[in-house]
Length: 214
Image (cartoon, rainbow, N blue to C red; front, side, top):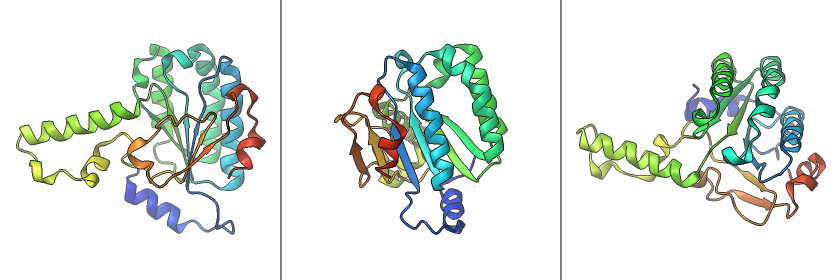
């Protein structure tokens, strides 16, 4: 997996005439009663990432109750073809391994098959809890201290960053929310991010609504 410094280097070396293009965009795609709408919008956003040359796109699908696992499973083949065609590094973030076994296996395959790609980065947050992410990072650090592999004075914002799920990513520049409520995706890294609230039900949001905000 590419580390934080690797991704920074890759992005710095990339040349583009679009100097105002954000380097990392998060779009929260929940809640929505119609999961087919979520997949359709995710599909459009992945195309938009390529069209606008956005290096990192993170799509949050919510918790297990927000996801139709059968629909997501059936979408995997199309997603796999897209990732291979565009050389996209794909990562799933959260407690996604608690989903149905066959879906977990397909997501693992996508992670593996794209591990050497670095043209673009696509992250799916599934069963992701921002507070749990920080709690898990603290747990890892405390365990190292107990095992005498670290000491309490070493704890710093940088150390916590190194141990969160998204440690390998640069902070998001833009976070797009369907409602006025902040979901907290990548909470530790969101300080300074521009939060854009579309103030619409997700079912009424189009790709044009999002594109106008980028």
